[in-house]
Length: 266
Ligand SMILES: C[S@@+](CC[C@H](N)C(=O)[O-])C[C@H]1O[C@@H](n2cnc3c(N)ncnc32)[C@H](O)[C@@H]1O
Image (cartoon, rainbow, N blue to C red; front, side, top):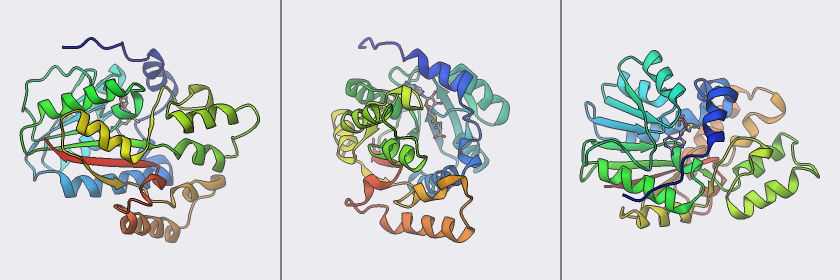
């Protein structure tokens, strides 16, 4: 098995001491849009319950808890021990432990479906992202879906712009991240990678998976929802959601979503 560099320590620090991940998908309209859309896409592509779902990089278990409540057997693994502990405490039906997505302590074909909703956007080396996808493919039974989320290449530039946080100091780093895909944690977030849609396809195929089907998760209107700290009207939220559904597979609009979802069958 190839040796990998250890995960960046700032990822552990960020999720343990800095950022409250457990309510990320509930506390802002953008988060609620991401959660609503990801759940409806998962409901479309996962096998019926009770199937065994691995949630790799599952954080404190927001999706895992939802899936367990729907009758799935869910096993969550995450790099951050505090997340695995929170997942066990908040979602007793979910089994949870600590592991790196690039080296899973699991036997081949043990899952009916595998989620990677996080690791791909925290691994800045392509070889590491491909290793995580290869591991997801290995632990998924033939015919089961591998589902991976990515952050879009333009998302940080767009989000920092709408927050008014691009200035003479931050602009060079934000533009460099837009050019390379590698985030500079000085401008916010943590060690992270931002994908173009075609890179996700290339990484799946490099991992031995078929070319994935790509979906834009939030659609192009997501930056409006948290603009200027003003709550969007219910009408704007539902219209943004509807717009995301309409354009979800349009290749010319994919990258305008904050996140992409890629789905391929192992
Ligand atoms: C933004 S959170 C997403 C959590 C959850 N999957 C969701 O979509 O809401 C990203 C998660 O990926 C985890 N992660 C990052 N790199 C990882 C790796 N190499 N192996 C396993 N988990 C990783 C982080 O610890 C974190 O919990």
